[in-house]
Length: 435
Image 1 (cartoon, helix red, strand yellow):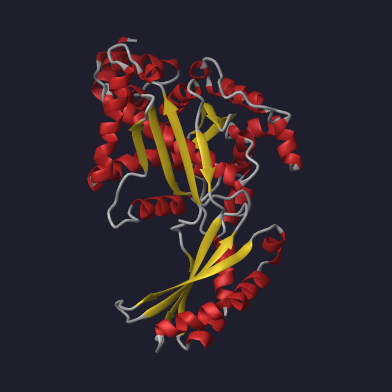
Image 2 (tube, helix red, strand yellow):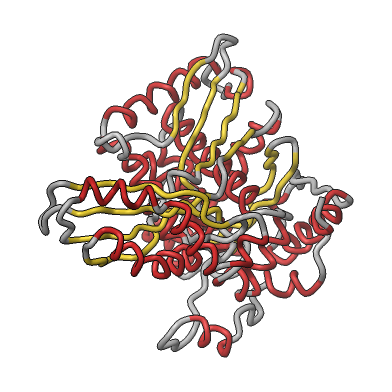
């Protein structure tokens, strides 16, 4: 066990913080930092007090003119593989954090979420054009497998020393394309705790001249694939009917309604797009908060959802033999703990310390559990009161602010218009005039 893992094992987190939502932002920050045993410096970073200095921002990307902030929240109640986690989420949409936390609370009473994953294998593609004998060239590349793997690993000896590196190759032939036949070689690279883009891109560029010699063709693209279907994460949850009961509905009926709602996403891409967007509502905010590439995660998720030739649901919801609601998800998750903004952004580093994850694989598995929780929340709402009631009640704060409410009046106006069932700027202004 690593030194960091040992420190974490001595400091268990309790993700159940009583009356968390009722606290003010500073008190919430103090509560989560205390629960995670974080230093006062992390509390300062989370408070947003120049968390990303302009000079640092200017070094991260080009043409910097300032900084753009998103609300940073924490989803509580999560138990994954028997361990509690506090989940940082950077997101602007109301109801996302509330839904994740509430579903995690329900799941917590049923044992929480359970996850598994494959090795962190990323793929780099080397495209070869104008090959006279593409199928014979494919065989020649396989014959040179060990040589190509050796060349790739020479490019990143540090990764190899950490137990990663190029492990194998694949070669595909496309007989017909808009530019004629092509051969595409894949490097399969274990990137350990990195997202891996820089490592696999460098390896692809290193072997490209040799690939051209072997095939007799012209190499064009040398770049990673964001369809990381060798780097999969899985999460599952089992919920008793009793845990799903509401004041007006039996839990078994709620579970059946959720299964039926998921069924439409399985067969219909129009529903699947919205269904999967709901999953990403949970995943993207954690990816953003930890400084990872949320665009790569989105691209991989949606490509994987269409892997069978038709876009479909990333999750499945069923009723098991014991009558429990069983939810599961499987998808690519190329996240890293080293490199990029994850290492340079102070708030991303603090977010990772809050989660207390010790590997990119652990981070990916927890993120998948958050996505499943978010999906569970959306389906539960659809199977009960409908998606708008809860969403609009939480959106009421934004409407109150638009109407001109400030300070304590924001909550007063929000509660009034939500209770009236009229979440609009006009109604908010009317309520504000009466305060």
